[in-house]
Length: 97
Image 1: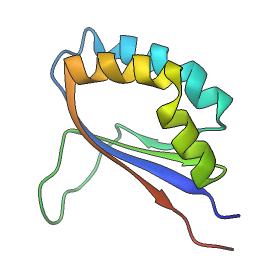
Image 2: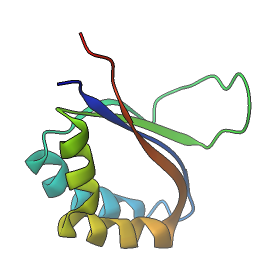
Image 3: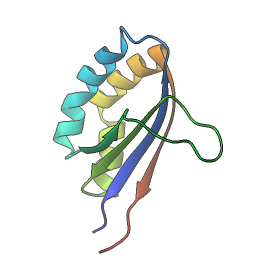
Protein backbone atom coordinates (compact mmCIF):
# COMPACT_ATOMS: atom_id res chain seq x y z
CA UNK A 1 0.00 0.00 0.00
CA UNK A 2 1.50 3.36 -0.98
CA UNK A 3 2.04 6.11 1.54
CA UNK A 4 0.22 9.44 1.26
CA UNK A 5 1.36 13.00 1.88
CA UNK A 6 -0.26 16.19 3.05
CA UNK A 7 1.28 19.14 1.26
CA UNK A 8 0.43 22.49 2.80
CA UNK A 9 1.38 26.00 1.79
CA UNK A 10 0.54 28.48 4.55
CA UNK A 11 0.68 32.20 5.26
CA UNK A 12 0.43 32.75 9.01
CA UNK A 13 -1.53 35.91 9.80
CA UNK A 14 -1.39 35.64 13.60
CA UNK A 15 1.93 34.07 14.71
CA UNK A 16 1.00 34.34 18.39
CA UNK A 17 -2.05 32.08 17.95
CA UNK A 18 -0.68 29.71 15.29
CA UNK A 19 0.96 27.48 17.93
CA UNK A 20 -2.57 26.78 19.24
CA UNK A 21 -3.35 25.17 15.88
CA UNK A 22 -0.21 23.03 16.02
CA UNK A 23 -0.93 21.87 19.58
CA UNK A 24 -4.57 21.09 18.81
CA UNK A 25 -3.69 19.14 15.64
CA UNK A 26 -0.94 17.07 17.30
CA UNK A 27 -3.15 14.30 18.80
CA UNK A 28 -4.82 13.59 15.45
CA UNK A 29 -1.47 13.58 13.67
CA UNK A 30 -0.01 11.14 16.17
CA UNK A 31 -3.05 8.84 16.12
CA UNK A 32 -2.91 8.56 12.33
CA UNK A 33 0.84 7.93 12.02
CA UNK A 34 1.92 11.33 10.69
CA UNK A 35 5.61 11.91 10.10
CA UNK A 36 6.70 15.47 9.35
CA UNK A 37 9.19 15.55 6.46
CA UNK A 38 9.35 19.34 6.03
CA UNK A 39 7.92 22.05 8.23
CA UNK A 40 8.52 25.74 7.67
CA UNK A 41 12.17 25.48 6.64
CA UNK A 42 14.02 27.55 4.06
CA UNK A 43 12.75 27.13 0.50
CA UNK A 44 13.40 28.49 -2.95
CA UNK A 45 10.32 29.35 -5.02
CA UNK A 46 10.92 28.56 -8.68
CA UNK A 47 7.57 28.90 -10.45
CA UNK A 48 4.06 30.05 -9.63
CA UNK A 49 2.86 31.56 -6.39
CA UNK A 50 4.20 30.53 -3.01
CA UNK A 51 3.32 31.03 0.63
CA UNK A 52 5.67 31.77 3.51
CA UNK A 53 5.41 28.35 5.20
CA UNK A 54 5.49 24.93 3.52
CA UNK A 55 4.80 21.60 5.17
CA UNK A 56 5.03 17.98 3.95
CA UNK A 57 3.57 15.27 6.19
CA UNK A 58 3.84 11.55 5.43
CA UNK A 59 1.07 9.10 6.38
CA UNK A 60 1.08 5.31 6.16
CA UNK A 61 -1.74 5.39 3.56
CA UNK A 62 -4.28 7.60 1.80
CA UNK A 63 -6.91 6.23 4.19
CA UNK A 64 -4.94 7.39 7.25
CA UNK A 65 -4.23 10.79 5.70
CA UNK A 66 -7.92 11.35 4.97
CA UNK A 67 -9.01 9.95 8.34
CA UNK A 68 -6.68 12.39 10.09
CA UNK A 69 -8.06 15.34 8.14
CA UNK A 70 -11.67 14.29 8.78
CA UNK A 71 -11.15 13.50 12.47
CA UNK A 72 -12.94 15.62 15.08
CA UNK A 73 -9.55 16.52 16.59
CA UNK A 74 -8.19 17.86 13.34
CA UNK A 75 -11.41 19.64 12.47
CA UNK A 76 -11.11 21.53 15.78
CA UNK A 77 -7.53 22.43 14.84
CA UNK A 78 -8.64 23.44 11.35
CA UNK A 79 -11.07 25.98 12.82
CA UNK A 80 -8.14 27.59 14.65
CA UNK A 81 -5.93 27.48 11.54
CA UNK A 82 -8.56 29.13 9.39
CA UNK A 83 -8.85 31.98 11.90
CA UNK A 84 -5.10 32.67 12.04
CA UNK A 85 -3.75 31.75 8.59
CA UNK A 86 -4.45 31.24 4.91
CA UNK A 87 -3.57 27.83 3.52
CA UNK A 88 -3.66 25.61 0.46
CA UNK A 89 -3.63 21.94 1.48
CA UNK A 90 -3.79 18.78 -0.59
CA UNK A 91 -3.30 15.08 -0.01
CA UNK A 92 -1.44 13.06 -2.63
CA UNK A 93 -0.84 9.34 -2.77
CA UNK A 94 2.76 8.28 -3.15
CA UNK A 95 4.15 5.77 -5.61
CA UNK A 96 4.25 2.03 -4.95
CA UNK A 97 7.72 0.81 -4.03
